Image (tube, rainbow, N blue to C red; front, side, top):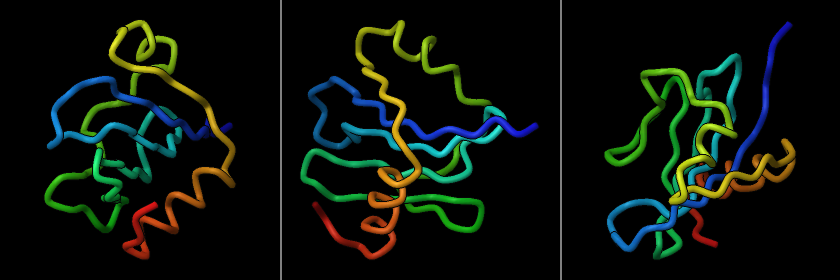
Length: 97
C-alpha cells in the first residue's frame, strides 16, 4: 500500500534568498513533487523530470511531519491534494501569488 500525503512547511527565518514555504507531495517517504515559495512571492518547482537552479527533489527520504515540526524553525501543516495542486499549477505556470 502506498503512503502518500501533501504538506506545507513554513520555514521561519530571515534570509531573503531561502524559501519561506516548502510545499511537498510525498510518496512512501520521498518527495515526488515540490514547490518552494520565496519571500518575494516567487515560486520554484521540481519533479522527477524538472528542477530549477534553486529547487530540486530531496536525495534522502523526507522526515515524518512530527520530526520536522520538532525543530522550532518549522511549522508543518498537512494539506489536501487540491490545495497542493493549486500551488503546483501556479508554480508550473510561472505565476506569483
